[in-house]
Length: 383
Image 1 (tube, rainbow, N blue to C red):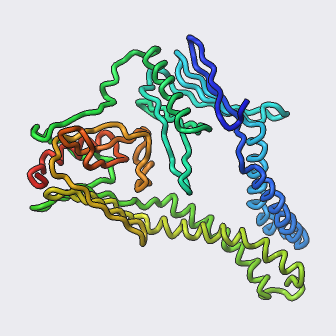
Image 2 (tube, rainbow, N blue to C red; image 1 turned 90 degrees about the vertical axis):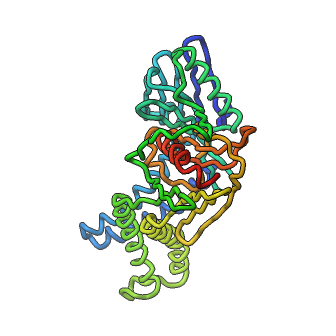
Image 3 (spheres, rainbow, N blue to C red; image 1 turned 45 degrees about the vertical axis):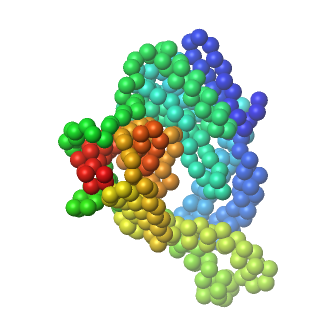
């Protein structure tokens, strides 16, 4: 069995896919676990020497991280994921260490009547790498399953699952679109969706769609607590390393250098948490704006101190298309919290041949339809 891909078992009643959790970074995690053990033991030894109850709480988060790394290593070698799709619906099983003493299963289930599509949801990572997720779209909720393998294999799996879906539940999929609106049809006066970050503004010679980031108090206080705790602990060791402390506890020679190199990853983690905290504070200043004026559309994306602009010609646009997104999330969008249903739609401006002129991605269906109605009301501005 190739542990980097998935296996498919199919019969007349159901399709089963399963794979092991093996990952290429397991050696790095083992080295990190070995390196992490040293500070855990040193901190525990120092707490035990002081014989104070409160000091025994300090090593707990360090040992919790140690246990998480150990869990990850065991899961990489022995864990397995499998899912079944049949007449009963979609069932996912996450199996941990089936072949040793501990055996755990976590299940997620979606009834057949609630499923209307399987898509390959792609997440772009650093250096051009991509992660593939099988996204099960339901009327009430969605399930994401991370799939090992290349894009073509996951696309082929989605085609097989959608074929079985039509076989098991042959209902109309007219609500999946695409919906096409000619530029000359009258608007329908669709109201702006209630739970949407998008806003519409109009001037005499242009109109705009704007989306701003939303401040999350929960994320703010969580990052504040974690960043403050981590940086407080690291700062105590840094001050000791710099000589601010009891002379008998200040390391010297080889011990000083060992402590210096051990503190480097902890300092990096602390700074990363601090940057994440600052990023959350600046979240309301993240702006995505589409401006439409005569003959052109301008896109501007601002995040913190970075920004990007682009201009697209609109001369000759003939119709609008509202369709499911091409399985990818717009790189400008961080608003998954607004899309609990898990599906992303596009609003596309088309020319007479049907080619795309402008595409607004990462929308909900209701948002795309509302924007379409706004464009039809404001079409004299851009034509």
